[in-house]
Length: 131
Image 1 (tube, rainbow, N blue to C red):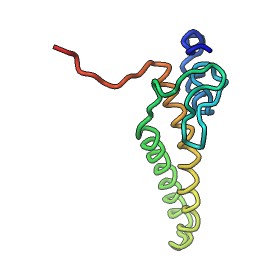
Image 2 (cartoon, rainbow, N blue to C red):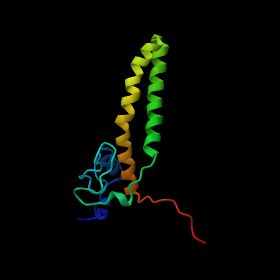
Image 3 (cartoon, helix red, strand yellow):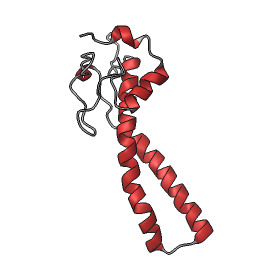
Image 4 (cartoon, one colour):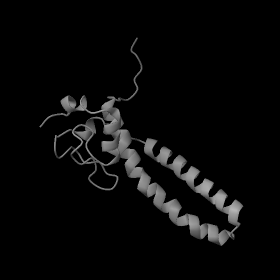
């Protein structure tokens, strides 16, 4: 089993981000990145890359998803209000399912892409230079 470093250089940044977005290993682009819906696997089942060494997405994916979901839903609700002026109960009926479904669909994709980009760029925790 390799650590994936030799294969990393042969993949472009875009293909690495796409592999992560599709839930694949950022090194070999074949193994599984997730063990559950949002739970990372301990390591790649194909190349053996240990995800615990670098994979920490933090709140980044959630922030992107909140901003994108808010932009889409608020924009669509405003357009519907301006053109059709439906009652408030109809707005609730229209937008509540989307408010629930869109973040659930986007969160895994963004988490995988950000973790893959962390791997690709060898991102580490910020450290202060020692004197």
